[in-house]
Length: 283
Ligand code: NDP
Image 1 (tube, protein in one colour):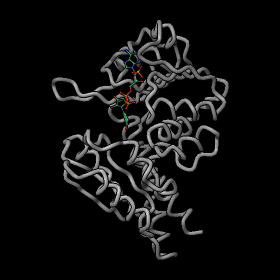
Image 2: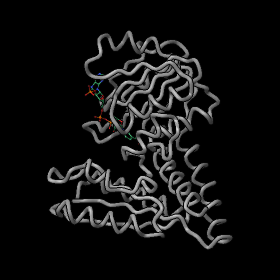
Image 3: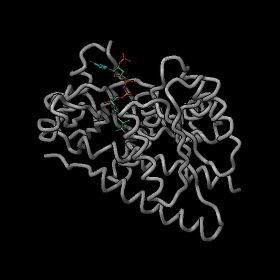
Image 4: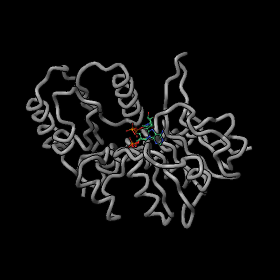
């Protein structure tokens, strides 16, 4: 039976230590880390995520600047908002909640954010810095995965890590971080052949697909570490991961639940990136 990694508890500890650091910055330096979150339109899921980010910011004593923009805003007007935030010294982190409406280029928006305030780590400059092993900001979800492993004392060095999913926000940066941590990395995607066989070869599996319970327990090597990034909503409204937890927990050595595993870490690492940015801008 696997040890279940409690992402909620680990994230709460990180948030508490950030709260203490923010209080110190406020009292000793008269500075408050600030995060600006831009949401365009009224996608219900995006609204939930943005509200959670805002509440987490406020609970940590950080400043949160909320920009709720209409779904029919022009790309030029949105870029203008970002330009102002880039120049605002009270803002240390800027993120635009994705997805954006079809008439706005996601790429143009990501590239408009100043790389030194790009706390999501999506700007091509930051992607490049991560790829050469000198990251300025690490994307929050894979950063959260690395932190979970660190806290649990799991060192990816010389391990075979299999990442399922190759998105720019999870799979690819995850693979980069694992490589930097001296793992041997296999990346899988929708055109990979014999996914069960590839997964069985994993000492550490990271699933970031978006398909409920797609990875069954009998694909998992006995004692493997299973990190389930997937967050999927079932028809009954409940959430589940990409891994079939009930069968995988019987074989894995460590496993993250979903929800309650990687999800809470993503927001904790967003706050961490913002505090790091504020610290960096003070010197
Ligand atoms: P994307 O849809 O951008 O990427 C999914 C990836 O999975 C693609 O690379 C795709 O391959 C691959 N894939 C799809 N079907 C298969 C298959 N049958 N076999 C192998 N690979 C497959 O998703 P994201 O990376 O944005 O998100 C992945 C999951 O993680 C989702 O459930 C999402 O909700 C969750 N998530 C959770 C976060 C958190 O905070 N916990 C944050 C971000 C995401 P291909 O490239 O070939 O199409």
